[in-house]
Image (cartoon, rainbow, N blue to C red):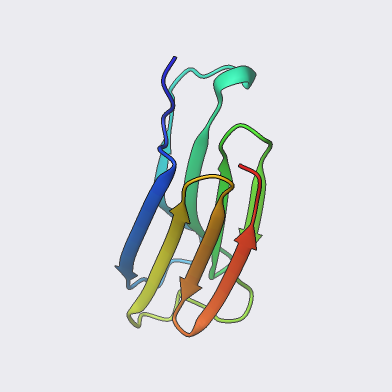
Length: 103
């Protein structure tokens, strides 16, 4: 079965919201089982960005608690992944987080 998410991902978004909680983006396989449950999710939880994914090596959960995005102002969000071993670079405004991960 083919992968839902490729090795290279570059998401570049601008968001403007007053919502404290919600889903901005979700991709995965509908009706997936535990063996092929790859997914990627970007959302807002308690006013902060929340990035989650599982690309085969277990779920990773990243929360940006440094700044609120539910303030009605424009915010730029970028999630970048370049092949394997994966290097994720997450940027929310001026706050950058780089994660070197297996999946």
